[in-house]
Length: 296
Image 1 (cartoon, rainbow, N blue to C red):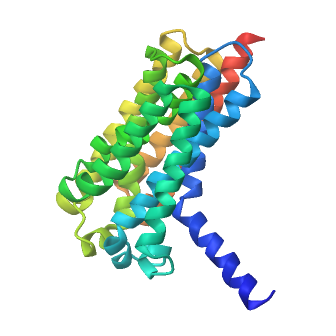
Image 2 (cartoon, helix red, strand yellow):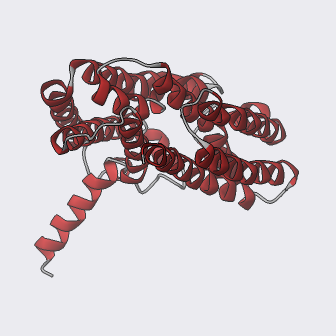
């Protein structure tokens, strides 16, 4: 490969990294499940593709803003110091233009080919994450991830409204599941990266209230999450297959939360964090499979 091609390839990878593809992929999974849970009818390929692409581009736009606003912080933290904007491989001007372009295209797709409600809710979630959480809450309060987590919990609602063009209680329940999952997910990572957050002067819960208190809070939120994830079955939204999956996954999450609480090994925090990702992916997969089992 020539030097020019190598540079071009690295630049593409840098722009892709700005979009946080793994985070966006998890968000799109919850949006996809929201779409299919919203109806027992077949979803047209056009609606499916425009919804996923529009939501995905908008989420990527917010991710790029996160890189921009956190440039100084990222440079101080081991986990993030090699990010493209933090290292100067992509300039602030380039990243800002990229973010605006992604956002405009994504929101336009949703407004033109999906519906205005979904475009509006996506815009509000983008502002909530990129502006309110990243720009203010992250540096202002140890409850940053709790308050700001509402924006990150929006994708299943966006998928639902893309199909129905209306707000329904079942969609809000999906939001509640992701919202309750968010604190134990992020606080486990914050424990593992405690020194990074101290160095960057970010008031994450383990920095302001200590690791032991954070571990207890993770355990309590995990218990609350188990109760919240039972609600789709309780209200008749999902059936026995989902209930089985939610209970098995929940018991395993509780195991990790308890192990984290009693352990002095920081590696357990990262193991808990990684399991939480698997937990959400598989939980929403059970929601989807249960929905189609009900149909057939």
